[in-house]
Length: 161
Image 1 (cartoon, rainbow, N blue to C red):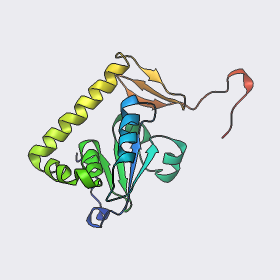
Image 2: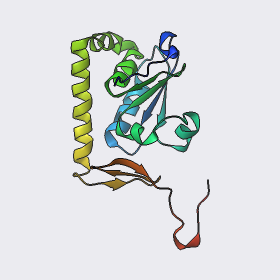
Image 3: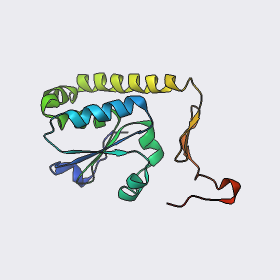
C-alpha cells in the first residue's frame, strides 16, 4: 500500500498543507514548533490529530491512524502518511526543499522510512511498552493500536462541548 492516496487530486498543484500531529507527544510538539519557525514556500497549517477540529474538517480520515503516524492533507484532498508525509512537509519548507527532492528518490525514501520508524520507536519507548490514555478519549495499546472511547459521565455530570 502506498503512503500517498491515489486520486485525481494528486495531479493538481499543492498550495497549502495541513499537518496533523499528536499534540500530547513531546517529539511531535517539538517538531510542530520547529516547523512553525521555518520559512515556508507552501503554507503549513498545524492541527492536532484526532482533535474535534480535525474530525470536522476531515471526516473521512481514520483519526486513530493519524495519531500513529504523521498525516498531511493537501488543499486538493491529497493524503500523505508516514515517510511521504515527512517528505512533502520538507518540500514545503524553503531551506529543506532540496532535501525533500533527494528523499523522494527510491534510496532516499528508504532513508526517510528509517527515520520515521526510529521516531516511532522513540515514541513507543516513552510509554514503557504500556498503553496510555489521552484526556480526549483516545487510548493506545501496544497490541491493538489506537482506540477511541468517548469520555464518560462519572458522577452523573457530563461536560458538553
